[in-house]
Image 1 (cartoon, rainbow, N blue to C red):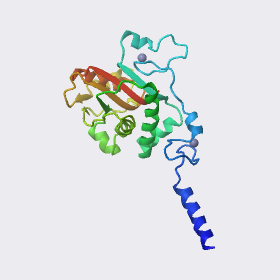
Image 2: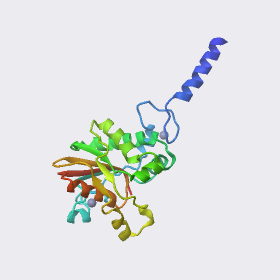
Image 3: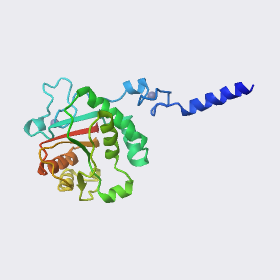
Image 4: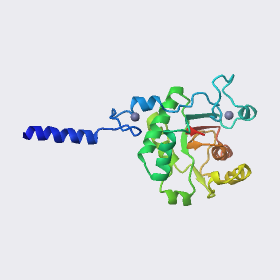
Length: 235
Ligand SMILES: [Zn+2]
Ligand SMILES: [Zn+2]
């Protein structure tokens, strides 16, 4: 009887502690970010512009969008996923509900997508910075949390405080196109000389790419020889 109770308690404990898929709560292997079913259903962004990660049709002749054919936004860009569920839910949970475990999850999922392409490792990986006031409001920088996990997974070097956000820009979503462009112009400063460096920027979601573009411009002004961008989701 005692043994039976012990087994029973042990089973409950194992069920409680066993890693679960964050999307559907099925039991998963500790090393897997998601269960196999949810993993297979992720909205992977397969065909995208190599310079800005915008989705292209599968039949696109080149992997460069019309805008980047004129002037490439980044030397190399890669988005892991479309900004759709469950990725949007994971990002929202991190940003607005402090589900910090989602940063590890998103870092793992983006690392998987990047590893498939085996791109040239950058000299340094830096997250899109938050303005100190925004950092205080949120308590953490979601892009930086993702970047730290990503770097860990890929064996890349992440550096903090490479860039500063010198203007507390209002939410981009509340602004029209012209206001958005003006809003991020001169929003960033480089805190160190980046002469000849290969810099990669990490962001959670890239929508218009104006924010990341402004940061890339700042990096180039500070001497960066190459600027790549990696984002979890591309809207
Ligand atoms: Zn699942
Ligand atoms: Zn493009």
